[in-house]
Image 1 (cartoon, rainbow over the protein chains, first blue to last red):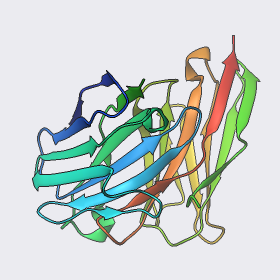
Image 2: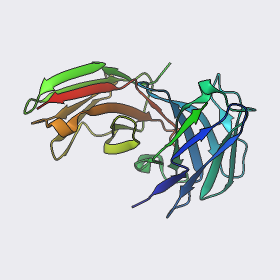
Image 3: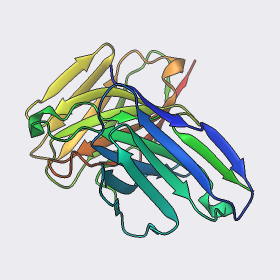
Image 4: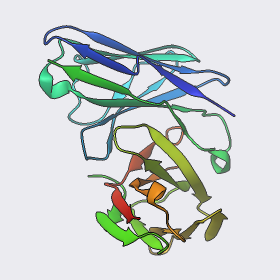
Length: 120
Length: 112
């Protein structure tokens, strides 16, 4: 079945540094990537949606200049947390979607295993 | 606000009992999915139910969907201590390549 990988699985960085998280679809073309953030004991909050080759669409309240999303190919999307601060510490999860299918065939949306970011 | 809302927020039961979690949502959906998440770990997809389906089974899991009430339920039968986790429902809409939003989750504790 389809597999989505994320790298790194965890990262610890100093405040002010930038961190890049990669999300790869391993055996299918992900025309759409969704990025989520999950704070401890909370649900997943959608941050942004990106379509391959297009600019990402950010959810309300998410700073696009702070969370840079690149979706340059059908198998890779990256999320860069710029000038990270302790409040950015969270669990970041990507989800790969395959558009172009009939609406009745939205299959299980595949999630990456997540990246735990800790900003000191 | 989140599309889905789970109820209850927390549930504690004894091993062997059944656990029922409910999810309500607000807009029309293409499908609804239930996920499980162990503490500090990623998501595990449990089951997907499409908008034209009313009930699905998978092992000890039973999911129902009532589109008229915009609600779904997840039943775990004969629970085990290993079922202890957080459970989320996620709704997928027809637009934007299946954008989905998550409910707040139900934290299930199964006591041995």
